Length: 431
Image (cartoon, rainbow, N blue to C red; front, top):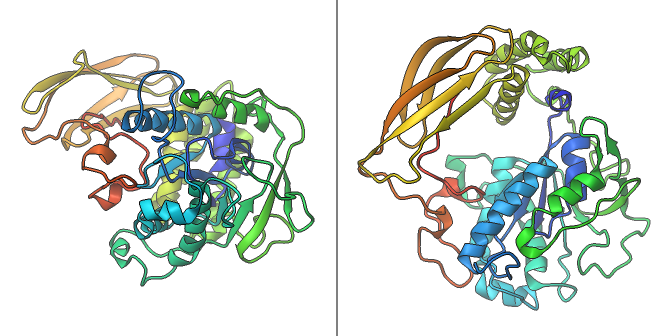
């Protein structure tokens, strides 16, 4: 919890880009997400649906669903986020030219630009080189797309239809992670590389980043990617490919503080105070100062960082209060036009006064107001009959809804592109 309070004072993003599930450098990602505490995400162009399956008979689209879930589990383990493009993993490709004959390059460039504009990374890191002939064609294509998207994301004439939802964005630099990873043949430790020790021990997690990385990598069960843990110093090497070449570390000239958000500088001191006053034996004592920060955040003009940090802060407050919320139903399935019975359990496991104000149900847009005090350690149960609209679509992975081509999924809604989750109509949201 204390680490998450500390992260509230870090205002920065990094996006790691490669081609498949398992192409990501979990040790570097774990270090960035938990040591540097920047928003960290992995963009896998494909869902790995062209590979083999070591845990069951599922192949192709069904395997892609499994590997999507494995990547989400991996990101939960290493503390980062996950994105995808519309590319299908059609199997081994010898070079990027062959790859782009099957993938629609312009559509995939649009996807990468969209994710950059939405996530707004200060730094992009690629796993592979743009030089053909050294690795799988999908790998090289992922680096080529990252390089082109680095510039296109800042150009309002490129994919202007996206600007209804997002603004243009220019990352500060693009780095190639040249460590001894898959198919990296060159001397990756030359003097012109940035050297980063990512083997540190995290006292909040009681693990080294080598241990965190092993847990993350081992989530790729359908690929048999389990690996042993490592401890002690471990170096990653990065080569500056685009943008300003740093001399003093990858974050040179990048402000990771609240000073980059207009009117938010006071939050630095408040979050520092919350961090130093945190009591693991009674985390609820942090609630007052965190609620003060929430008031300041909510008063700021709308911005990307306001929403990101407000979401983080609300999660920290809920955890400090020991809030437990669950919505359950005995029904395993429900059809349009039916009604399902929902049982909601809420408990406040702190002595801080809390009141339930509202429960809303996504997709059905149902909402119920309450004025229900939640007393210390007393379960509250709410029974609710949730009607399923007659026009509610059936649950299915959104990228499989439309007919796909050999190389591309077809997704009709812009806001879904990049999303890792299988959208289910009957999710419940409790504040």
